[in-house]
Image (cartoon, rainbow over all chains, first blue to last red; front, side):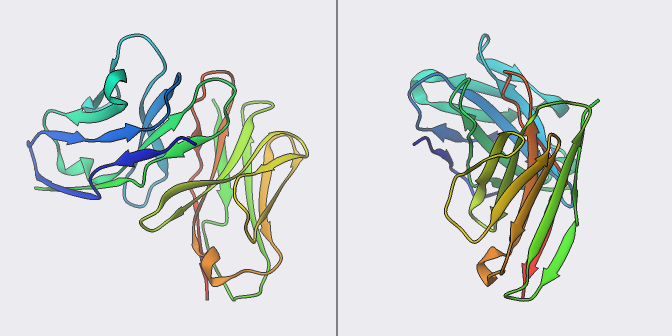
Length: 114
Length: 112
């Protein structure tokens, strides 16, 4: 069964600091990869996704993620965080077409200090 | 555009009482529908998914059940709630082959 690991449970950064949230998965075949974000008091939203093609994908609000197949990783990055980025971030993996299960990591809580 | 709604948003229920959480999707037909639970410190866990009316697959054994009486309606139920059923429940939908899953607003369930 596939699994997803997010290395950091809670990250605290000052505004303008750079962000990188780690995500590793354990499935060896074709995968679809996602980052979801949940802002305080709001529902889960799609931040960005990777299906195929350019392994560097850009999402909303200046976020990007890089798929490195050899490392089974899909790390989320942002060069300069803002207070409004305070949220919980979930990495998720779906093992390609025909699979209905989206496996989530346990989430990383990001707190940005003004 | 497609929208998803689930209710109630918050619920406090005594142990042993029944549960019914409802989810509806608009703007799409024949979606795949999902119920997830988000427990503190444990991430998101898939509970049930449905690929069509009356078709329910359960991912984990538990005290809950799901039903899909209509194409765009998905219901999460329990006959007798346990304390361990407390958590944040998310309904989600998916359509087409792109596999992106979109989530509802969530329902907070506290069993007391």
